[in-house]
Every structure is written in structure tokens, then in C-alpha cells.
Length: 297
Image (tube, rainbow, N blue to C red; front, side, top):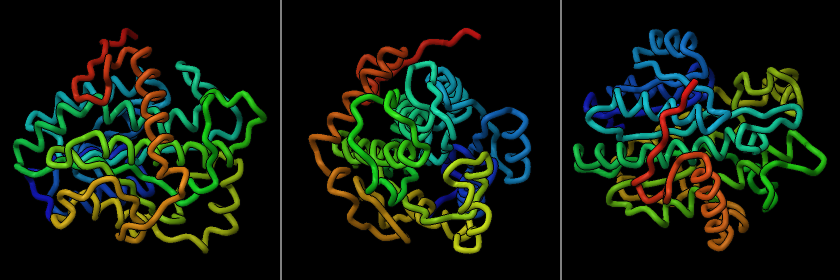
């Protein structure tokens, strides 16, 4: 672990479970951690417990992501060194974000992509200040192998919570590889972490995941163990220039052929960029010059 008090990290979805364990590990190593939760109350409570800095926003919309990016930009004056896109969820019923994207895909893919785009300048400042590449870590899953190459993110077909989750993970992993290819690894690296099957509150709202968080919970690993791969990607100095990887149990592994298809990755990147540009992020969100409008409440 090579973090220090000079390291500033943001972990989304950090009020419990995997995110909380990730914050705890990074903070214990000396990093200043921005602790994100959906509401101010939950963020403040989690940050107090974890000795971090609270930031909050509902990541179910691009407007919420913009709110979070503004807060992070304000408090990370010396730049951001690590971004862990951990926030997730799986809607039991089909529901659309304000941008017309199915909610599971909106949170797992669109939100993490938008937040990364908006924070690229802050990450570059962190890289310059530390003379080391800044790091983006997207929390992924091996269920991406079951995902399909969606072209309509509104999910107009018959909805399945499980399929939407798998499809979202494939989208985001393909995006991870494409963005890593676009960014200079001497400035910013982008990798994906598979935490394995972790005992969290992920399935508490019912649906396809309820069984694994209830009767079969004993089969799952602890959040602390699940967080180890993301923590390594966020902090291990031997990975300073490692980018475009998918890691399980701290080691790079081969993901699905679909996720590694460069043409599909570029398609996902282009579709994401167009969606974000329509939402006020752009004109080229992933160039590092993305801007966003001040959202009026």
C-alpha cells in the first residue's frame, strides 16, 4: 500500500458494504478519502465513522453526477489521485433515468462514465502534483460474460433485473478498456476490479439478488476481502502505469471476448459520449476538457 496523507481518493457508494471497506482500507493507509453516499445524512454519518470527507448525490441521473463532480472539484483543491467507481444497484422493475436509460445501466455505467469524464481535469491535477499517474478503478464483475451487446439502453424489451445487471457490467467493462486506450497512462490509468461474490446489502430490495443476500449469504466473502482488488489497483506502486486491465483476486485475468472487442468498446464509448453531450457534458467528454452546466433545482 503506497497511499499517504498527500493522496486524495473518492469512493462512490461508500456508506456500506464494499465501498465502506474500500474507504476503510485506503484511510488506514493514510489517504484522505472523500466518502460518497446518496444523501447528505448518510454521507456525513459514514464520513464521521470512517474519518473521511462527506460528499453526496443521487447517481441515478447525470444531474446528480454533476452535483457530485462540483463537490469533489471544490474539496480536492490539490487534485484527485484515485477515483473508485463503486456505486451500484439493480432495479427490480424497469425504470428509466431522466436521460431515458434503464436505471441499472444508468448507475453502473452512465454515472461512472460521466463522473470520470467530469473529473479528468481534477485527476490530471492530482497526477501532476504527485508526479505519478492518477487512477480510475471501476468495480466490475465476472457476470459481464453473460451480458449482451445492447444498442438501446432504455431496455424496451421484456425486462429482467438479472439480465440488466449483466448487460450493465459488460457495457462498463468494454468502456473501461476503450477509455484506457484513449488516455495517456503516464497521466491517468483505468482498470476494472472484480470483487467476487460479496456479502453486502445489494439484494435487500428484492428481485433476483435477494437469495444471495439471504439464505445463501454464507457462500459469500466479506466486504473487506472483496475490496482488496480495488484497493490494490488504487494504491500498489508496482501498478503505476498498468492500465486497461481486469483484475480478480489482485491479479489480471482475461475477461469475455465481447468486452475485449475494440470495435464494441469504441461503440460504447461513442454512445456514452453522445448521451453525455446531450445532457450538458461535453462536447468531447473524454478528452479531459468536459464541462457541465450548473443544474438548477
